[in-house]
Amino acid sequence: MANSQRYTREIPHRFRFEGQKFRDGYVTLANRYISPESGSKEFESINISKKGKILSYTIIRTPANDYKLLSPYAVAIIETSDGARLTAMVTDSKFEDIKIGADVELVFRKIKEEGHSGIINYGYKAVIIL
Image (cartoon, rainbow, N blue to C red; front, side):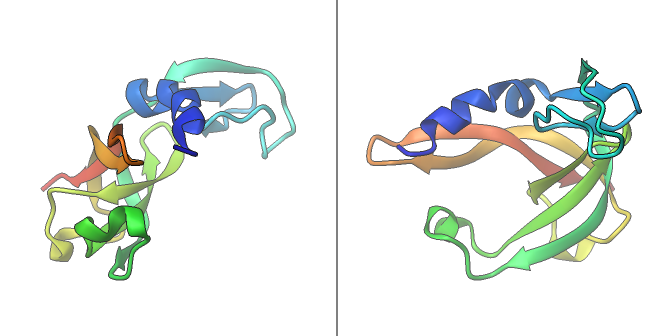
């Protein structure tokens, strides 16, 4: 259960798509305390858009042990419509529909089970919008 504490800290952005917008306009989904653009420490909490586009992707055919049952699966770098960039597994989509520039929607899904007790981790995955 090594990831349980990290998982708990990430609940605001995994469950509620709660992000940050810095004074310089930089938007992030994961918590940052300093903007990489300007070094600004001033930000406001915002709800990140669930719509975006694929910037890059790959198909994972030899996964880590936690994801063996899902293999093969796609992972994409996505830019939301408000500018946040994130990495997400692509689900409920055919591999041939996954393309750079494809429109996606972030959805709430099961990510994995953790440890012997089977703690279920939830978060966001991407679905191609056709």
